[in-house]
Length: 310
Image (cartoon, rainbow, N blue to C red; front, side, top):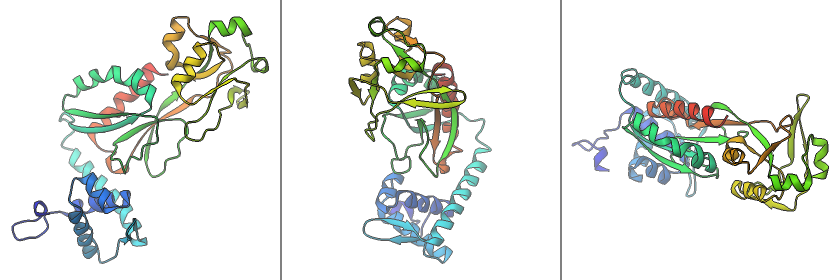
């Protein structure tokens, strides 16, 4: 704890430091996790919160052996802290706009978008911003931004997160495809009315196990129907591989099968009856939405996805 004390044993933390520490404790619901994220001793984090409570004259946190939660005063104070921290960061950044963005970013994106679209383009971004380093998570699991200290995540599909800043970066088109071997054996479906005579490769959500219904847009509404299928999978790789093997029709983001379409290994069917596009959204915590390195990365990623995925 000595690194946070002056020679007289007094705290060297200013009020904004105290606000940031308190906010991280609230977000992590734990002194220990907050200390890990802040790279500080747990005792220093606890002492900082105690100092803050003494300064404001109110108890801000309920403390138990398992979890830390804000009191009613603490919840109100937390919201004020976020606004004050953002104001301070915005003021500091007034004089940094001309400087080259720098620092480390922790990013998390869905697996196939990360592997097929973002990773091949990353060298160009890193060349353009030589002072930014990236911890690049490529996973399909739901990442907790606050607890895992992630700067931003890319989500595809409807949002369930709350308390995060959301930036829409477009919609991901879905297309219907099948292999030439499947179409030769079963015929080419022309409309949803033909689907009763066809098979689909069914996709089960990895998180819920629910099998997705076949969807399409019609007269401004979204229609759906369960499809017969002899194979059910729970990963995009298996979904595409099953379609290539002639096991049924699939609905898939267009970018995901672009090379298969170009090679003639898959063929689009029912182009006038596509499913609704999937929204793509960047999410990041309130406290970081003014970061210059995050802004330039978000702008770059939006331009990349609109060029390569839409």
